[in-house]
Image (cartoon, rainbow, N blue to C red; front, side):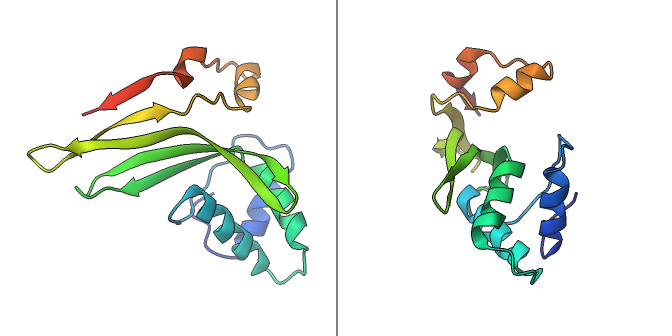
Length: 148
């Protein structure tokens, strides 16, 4: 599905929660957490009187990872974070950061320098990826990757 902007978010969540693995969509937000708030709000726009907790459970069940892309000060777009949704605690969707972009400086030509830094947390969804034939090396979550 392309970008989600409105009440079609409910249809998207329902499709994602019917056993169709591999769904992908985009949403504009300032952070991974804000993406969840926006998605929650867009589902509410459908005016179906669905309880907030039920909406959040649908979101937590449907989405495994959020990949945050930002426009940096040099105008380039970079992945700046990969976060995993891990479930719910009470009324709140729980998340954990897996990778974060750490800005280390700016080159003389104005380009942002940095590195992708693993947080040390191995994502829970890595077992599902392995079952599908995508095995992730354990040291992937310990390494720092420098981006020039």
